[in-house]
Amino acid sequence: MMGSFVIPIILQLIGVVVLIAEIIIPSGGILGIITVGLMGYSLYLVFTTISIFAGMVFVIADIILFPAVLFVGIKLLAKSPATLKTSLSKTDGYSSQSDELIELMGLTGIVVTDLRPAGTAVINNRRVDVVSRGEYIDKGAGIVVLAVEGNRVVVKLAS
Image (cartoon, rainbow, N blue to C red):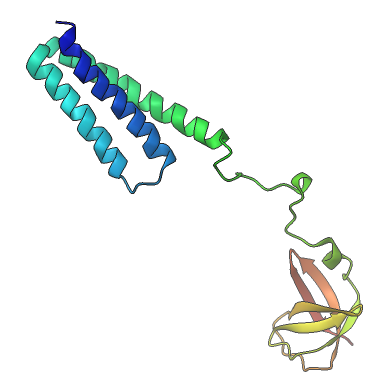
């Protein structure tokens, strides 16, 4: 009787391994289908060769086992070095705003290209991509930096 449990248990264990591989390896669901096939065949063998009671025990074990394996697999994957970081912080050296751009606040410059409303200006002897508040500013006009929003430098025509 114990020998008849060996193949279904092996199929269940292989199904768990393939399920973990599905979490790690992008397969487009192919490994998931293989997992379902392995588990289904294992349950078929238990129900047909052993007993209905043993089959129900396997079904209950699968109902408990699969969500647990998925949960643990996803948690381990999230902590693994193979995954991307979930956040970028300034302490790690990431910044969405250049410190150099903040220094341009209130400075004046000359427009190098027509601003319609985006273009290039020279501010503090440095070429900077700028944007006006929506107005057209001719090449060669004087501008003043109004705001620095992230990597966007907002300018207006100097009075």
